[in-house]
Length: 180
Image (tube, rainbow, N blue to C red; front, top):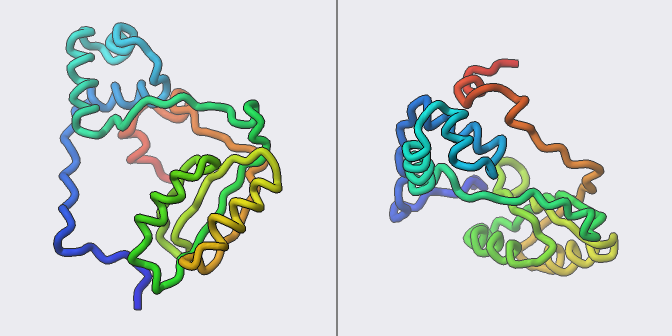
């Protein structure tokens, strides 16, 4: 029996990717590097009028290509000195609960994000805790104590590095063509 989620016949098909032109891609790339850039600077950076730029940004938001704008908060400076990535494997009998399980984890205050994985683990849970005791309690109570959970593996994050789009390349097209 495969552990891969099966697409149910009643599940809605994924929408086709919207067609983007070079200006749309430059807008996305520029906002990925600096989401706080004012519209007039963004327009100048991508070479269009501010009104055109604003219309395109709103269209990209409406299409779901821009999901939101977030602040990158340094949780360590707020007292959350321990960050960890916890991989979770769910029992085969609990496969039907995967989405509900992930949604429940997202309601736990120490959880930063949850990634649903392919492979031998089902989830990767990024958490930020104030202490090793809080980390232990999360793993013991929220994960290992859940009858749906088969196994967990906790990895402490020593340092988290984030890609800087402004130094990573010039476009998404460049990323598509990238080869090692």
